[in-house]
Amino acid sequence: MPDVSTDLRVFNDFDRNPDLLKKFDKVLEAYSAAAIFADVQYRTGVMDSAIKPAFRSKVTGQAVTVQLSKGDLVDPLRALEMGQPGDVIVVDAGGDLQTSVCGGLMGGLALNRGIRGMIVDGTGRDTDELEDINWPIWTRAITPRGTHTMFSERKEELSINVPIACGGVVVNPGDFIVADLMGVVVVPQEIAEETVRLAQEQADREEETRKWVAKGKTVEDLLNEFGRI
Image (cartoon, rainbow, N blue to C red; front, side, top):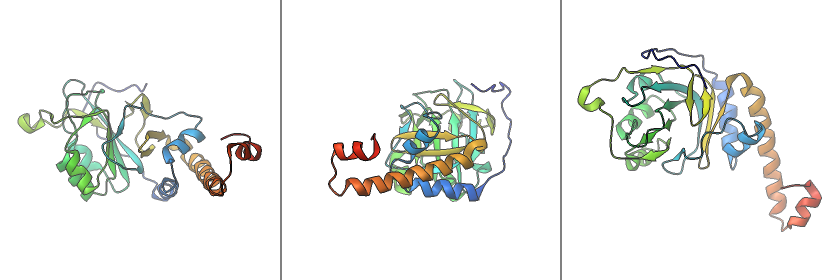
């Protein structure tokens, strides 16, 4: 797990790589993109299976990481101010299942900035609105209960772009996120170029195999041809 400072209110930034992100976007067009990236990373980087999309969605992007104060959750509004087009906000909310840290208005503001979605080790709400504006979130749970921010106006008890743990996976600012119906996979920046190359190769192989199977092949044919599923 990362060494997360207890001194919150740290606001860093990172260098984006839009050209590399386009390669991730290309793989996302394939079936089961999260599974592909999990496979080529030898099944590492996969967040806890409880973190799922609120509605049918898929996204790639670079991680704007957010560390919230466990037990004293605030809305991560500062992350919206810092986020840029192509980013995905990734929040460590301590796995809290009772307090939402993301809702419809926040989603609309993020959408206006080109932020692609949010991953929360915790809870979200306003899923009807989020689905209508097509701004996806992945969370452990959904609840109507929000944070205290709207009453207290406190919104600074957080750190942005520090190493965090989300869904049991270390996420560093700028890491690449691949999320779909199955779940969320994290690709560290330092291996992203090689990983996305391998992922595209696997996606291409699977599509060719899919076309081959569609010709009426049997399990025996497949095993004889490839030796495995």
